[in-house]
Length: 307
Length: 269
Image (cartoon, rainbow over the protein chains, first blue to last red):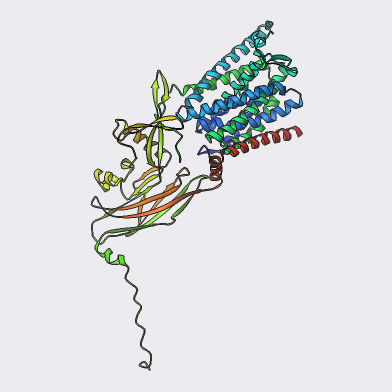
């Protein structure tokens, strides 16, 4: 039941990969996230080189986000205007990120960059999500009323030039913050292989204060463009995209995502967020842990010589 | 009646093979492979080659056969993890100018029993005596904008790096020592099997078949073989490396199409 992955150059059990794709797809459908952050660590654990895992699952994110955007478009829940500005930033970010990743890989530091960015970003986001959602659950149990949140946008958003109207999001702000946000997500997609939804969604909600109904659909649209560019750049510059790997993951992933989405209605939003926060935090810690554990072999091959 | 018959034609005498005279006097080894061209099916298991040979031994002293198969040389980059402030970090990559991409020995007995250390070192037989190219002095080279340190043959950590190359390659089944890989199927006739893993490099391989007697090499037979890779996986690999941009675009189209298809299928349900 083993299949040889031509780019990763390892043999893996393919039913296991389909199952992995389905599980991650289910989780991503359940929580409304891309699931990339969960996929890469598991692939690395299965023995796939980090550089290949990160690049191949970028194309997996393209597929899962495509089906997401289609259903959000039907509900008119995608703001293509602000999404386009963010995607432009995403393209720039992907260009920068892939070049950075290429350089780090040649230096033999790609593994470190992957582990460190997982530890930092997932650690911070997971902690914040867990803290916020647990607080909300506690308040509900005690019967307290959720304190009224400050709904004003940060003032500096209005001080910047290049203001644009984004009617669907209910915004009239400078194009620079969404562009910068997109750039940041692009860099992350190159280094971590994630769509960046876990950064984009909170930032769009709490910093840009977009209309909540369009946030997820718009972030997915931005993610498609960014990860598509990342996939092309990763294969063009690093030759690390394994089409066999990403296709197998897709087969399970798309099915899992649909079932996950159907299940998500059964849980309260803050409970889902608490579980997701816990998963995010654990994945971040698990990825960071390898930096502190003595490796079984101190030596490793580095890529970058002609075969 | 009998006298009437024409005289029988003189018997055709086959020209004596050159070797037959030599065989009677000296100890020799001859070998051949079932295939001079090996196609590694990159899908699952790689390939295996069978090498056959004969030992001509007119003396009473026993002989040992050692088969050495060496793949094409290529540079090797390595990193070493070191602990800095509690965190394990990779060092700067170091470069070996050339190490065989494949190296295997098969013999009738453990190599150490067949010949002594000096003899094996001189012939370069056995992974411990494998020649890995390294210059006398360490220097740095710049490739793709990254400065690599080239390992020096005289440097104090040379042996550590060298052992690491061998250990990592052994783990990938690219280097192997099989101390009973040569088996005699009949008196003087032996066979050895060489397993090429799917990751074995392509190109020209060299096989040496050594015959040892009393710890001394008495004869050698040289063979070459060409290793090619075939199969759909290989085609994908070639495509990804030769036309990386088209490959990337294809990956994206495929991914987007799958997503589209999935949303279609699940909408109808």
